[in-house]
Length: 381
Image (tube, rainbow, N blue to C red; front, top):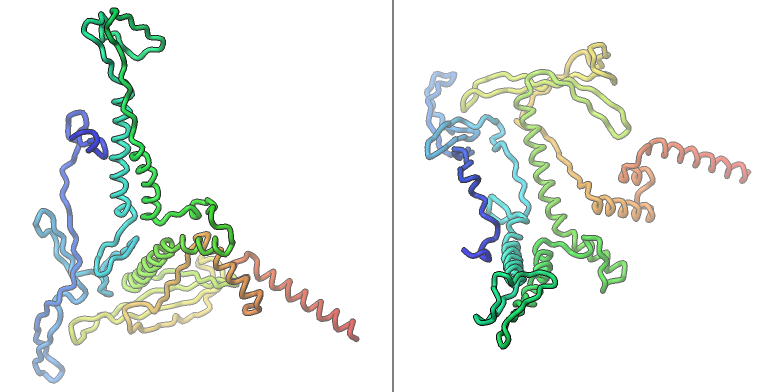
């Protein structure tokens, strides 16, 4: 291939020896098979009943390499969920994998590489123009080199001249410049997102609308990330419920800074069920006083609370919130607008802004209001 057909240099060789290691691809497949089997059970009355149950009630895991099955086992999670969470940059309907920014920018990047490589090749080849020398000129062509102040002596009546180099096509340069807008359109990048002021737009409301439009893709990625984090949070709570068999200490802190400690554990009891052995789970909770857990704390509840768990998962909510600057600024601006319209009070405003020492500020505001009310009462009397 010519150089213009190469996007990147060939680096598959290193010192003439292959550095690749012998590897194989391990495929781990998580399945939800629907195969069932019949089993005979004898009830309390002594009657034989046929019970149909799934062979893999929670799921199935198969590991394959080089076409050979290495391992096959039941999915070790009672919630029946596959042990992974998926974060897609851009979602595709009815597709497992999404689309990334790199995949969208690959095509214009290849075009840019070819154009730039061709332009550099033209500059390299034509940077040293061709010499035209008559055979009877008496000039040795090997002495015709690019040198400052070069003097060429020739025979009378002969010709020694230098051809002008081929100039780089202007269309190639304009196409390279046009690729910039191509990149920006595909990636969703605009001038205003790079901190540049749009020249044709001067109104503040129009600039704000441009900023909102520029954040469309970022908001979409933020929603996908929030969904991914919520999935991770739910799976974490379910794994906690399934595998926490030893007492653990948890700390809970509310908005006022009050801290409480809990000792939490799960007791399991295997019991026969209609489809086989099942586990009855009981949560054991014991509350402690504030302070460090060092063995000397006062137990607020001498008798632990025992709660039977009817479900295999917590009734948990996972809340997410973006910390991007524009999201925080929008949230603060909305809160200020609601406060100005007296929809929310100062306490709610400080809570939304997550202002430090807001309890002390609210207390000072209450004292100031009380002093003003007292002063007004004295003046009125």
